[in-house]
Length: 351
Image 1: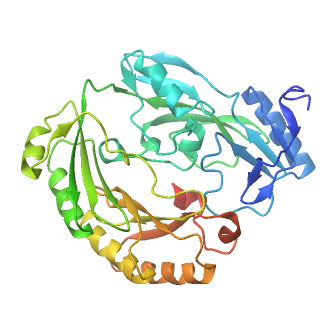
Image 2 (image 1 turned 120 degrees about the vertical axis):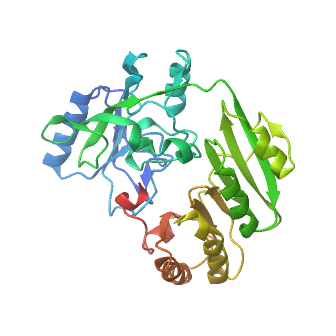
Image 3 (image 1 turned 30 degrees about the vertical axis):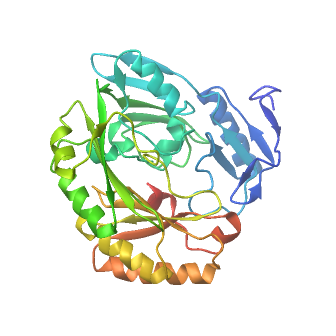
């Protein structure tokens, strides 16, 4: 393909799949102009295009019917116009979030986000508004976007903030925060979801940056609070534990794998324990749950071995329970053969 150059346009390989569908071709453009050229060509040829960053969330949500062309953003990388005093920077959306944070740290700053997908690109994170523990204090990635640039089949354009567009986001200007001088965690074991909710409520009364809970299907769980440049000693004393500079091993990680069915639960923090118990009742046993207990936003794991009909029954029961609590439940990821038969989250519901 002349648009990308001979080394950056190729026939798809076995790894180039989306929702169980193997793509026809992969294009890796280096500029916004090239992105626009690809989208115009695809429109002329009636090709279904799927943008891809690292691919960590490419199978999330409702699967498409086909994918003819994957538009890989790996070469849309880098940052510029870094205004240290104004605390803003423009970053290309193919840039890995970790690479962005490393570059900003050299100037004592950070984008206050921590998506659990370890290989996440800025674009992939923004498209689904992927949030980690820091959402407790700093809200979602979308809240830090000043404006974004995007390309569709007809034009290149900018919009204030972050918005869903029909094209491909190529860069974003984001607001930054000073890098904290110190980070400390206070972690306590909990025997039940009810105790986890109790400790999470206690932690939110302190100057915390995040409050997370890990509730495995078997055995005790844990609640952990992150303090950044703030006093962790009072909460540690109240919980009878020590302060540590090392995060728990499960911190900021999804509880599900590629063969699981991933469920997102969003309720008021006071209703989280009851929701976890309701899920266990619907499933017929405890499900692993992990996430932001201080916000009532967590992920749960359902077995990928269950038939689609059984999974839909569980979701229907859970949605009825959450309706009375003004909460939400959404299936965000599943093995492709199951996802095509389930009521998966839409793109809007993912963010």
